[in-house]
Length: 479
Image 1: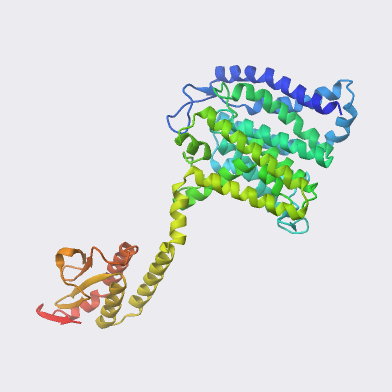
Image 2: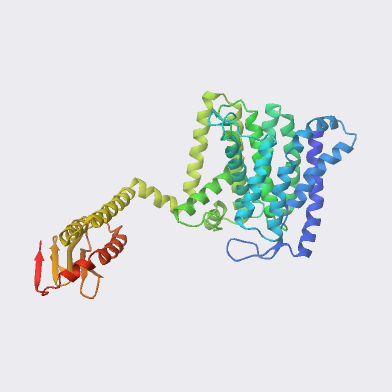
């Protein structure tokens, strides 16, 4: 087994030597990441494209050990064909990221490359076979689940790469955890695949840790996420636990949690899901007053905790796995609470405090009001629908003037000074006046859409009736 430490050492050496050479070349070529005063925290332009030395170091370690008469070389030769099956898929990921580093790709172009690479990995044998105890190998959903997992892992490391040394360090922790799991499972191909990546990341981290002199870039972050996603699937295929992907998921908890939180936050804010912002986990920790270096160290510690959970999940018997999952979920919940995301607090209050039910009730009322206006044929029908719904919304007075005829309902209206008033013009001679008390117990959540609906519907449906009702304006009908 001398080949295992030799793989790691050779890859580490190559990465340690190649990274500064690539850094200087990228700087001369102008392939740098420039600060923007917002999400990008560095002061000066920093070369990107760190995936290049990592990829070269990873492949070169296998090639060099095959050429050297080293004890254990036969082991590499025996299992290397299995590892090389992933080369086309990993190459597509690397090229996609490198093109984005060089010229910039649109989101759909990057996503297309990621889906293509995930599909190639699927045909190479990387397949999610079990989720939450349910086998998927015989179902049609193995392919979409595998693609979803790998695309999520790629984007998770791409999004978490926002502080010096964060993505590469988390990748190193996850790789070492997967290597330990491979040793425990006696999974030699997985052990051979992980150690060169660990060596390459360790050598690269020498230049990527705060203050970084080179960034991973998309070529590096996407490649790391893809390889770790593939390693996690292979780990789960050999796992004896009934929960399959749970242990690999715990290993990648920080990046995957960050991408999930980002998607949910943007959904709640009604923002584009793929738009960059400053709401990631590392940004929240920076906003709490931590320095960039301390943010990275804190997340390293959390990642190490996730590694412990994942290894326990793989070692313990089924009756204890539920306890590990509960502890992991509890720790995750406490961590998210500590980050203080406003979106989740507001959403929780809406769901628990009854505001969501009131919003749903208001939307149902609007739908019923629209249907009643559509079914109305006479002025009396319109007036009945308007009066009843205005009462539901807490309006203390409603006054409809249609041509020369006036309809008015005073539902507890007493003092004009304690009310706000709203006038909705329908035509030159027709309008609606609404009055509502400031301290009304009914929350005006749907007043604006109610007013829009009222005006748009009445303008089109009451115009024919208005011409028939041109009577002296002193006629008032009070209900």
